[in-house]
Length: 298
Image (cartoon, rainbow, N blue to C red; front, top):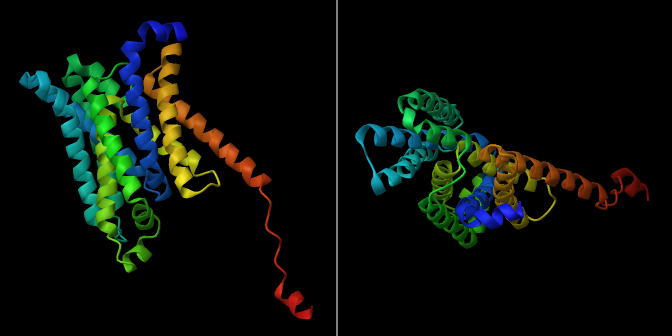
């Protein structure tokens, strides 16, 4: 493995870095996704982004688009369609209706069906479509690396500056509104960040690993009895490690890259959950309080 990387390290440097950076940003945002029980949002955005990329392949093939325009069309359409879904989610808000669930269901099912229908119409790009769905591509464009790096830096910087506000608005929106916190604006910023990074990551890595790197690291980190800041740090670190180790596993075994990254993320999540159970059992239990009746008699 090390001899292989020594020989081909320059060739695989960009995809490895892309997977690590995307895993870090997706793992960070995934804590909000899992803790707010909106996992289906990430799934819907991944499929919507995959549809945007597939439409870009279709237009490029039938209109003869080449060069920078063809290269930018895929991430642009992926982000555009994801942003439309996010706009619908923000507009619906937390209304006690089936509106949000219906939107997510349509945003997941319809793009999946359209991708499967458009795939055979672009035979020359069929491998690219397969890579977008399952993350089977080994190499990535350098432009994808720079775009994901910029988006991840923006996400991290936003979280550092307004971490308390995002957490407050996400975990206790009712109280946050009474305190004057702009919950809807923060939700729009959060969902917008998820849409941006999901769209870019789907184009570079595929829909399957994008969804896996969003959800699985957060599931593992939330099983640990640590402070909330450490949950975000551990989830981001686990996401980056899953992107790296999954890629190396795919190179060593000739497995699909996206499937390998997803399986590694699942394994790390299980290890973190198991560690959380062990630590919780070893933690000293607080002394039992004296029952009121016995306290009165004493």
